[in-house]
Amino acid sequence: MMRTTPLRRRSRRAAIALPVALTLVWTLSGASFFVGNYLAGRWARGPVRRRCGLLWGGLAGAAVAVIAVFTTNNLPVALVATTGMGFSHAIVAALVTTMIADRGGDLTAPAYSINAAGMSLGVFAGAVIAGVGLSVAGSLGMGISLLLPSLLAFVLVPAALFTTVE
Image 1 (cartoon, rainbow, N blue to C red):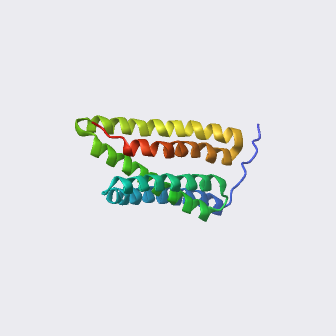
Image 2 (tube, one colour):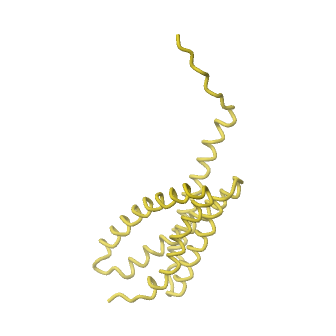
Image 3 (cartoon, rainbow, N blue to C red):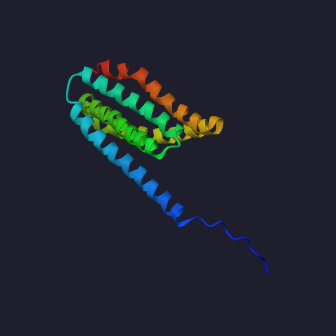
């Protein structure tokens, strides 16, 4: 008969802690995204200058949060950063949706479809970028690699806000 080596036994506490932490992070992320999207939709009802500030604020918050999430070993800091990241990304998403609604005209529906496809492509591209960063420099590399698209977005904000559509 063949003997198998027993699997390492995890303590009950460790077996419970992982799903609880995952659930907490997932809930905080989703709730903060919902609240951020709702509030940003309200805040976006104003002049272009306010929208510009919201976009830059959302991108800055996301940039800080992404570095914090991938460089900390402290759960409370990671939870705060995750909440900030969800809230900040929701602000940017709400402003993009608002700009499509304001400028889309007859092309609003197709523009929303392209935006949705772009978000899916962004998730895929983000996973690739994060994987490259992780393989090159660990968690810090992943954080920095995910920071790069946010920095590119900083450059594109003025073009998105101040370009008129005829």
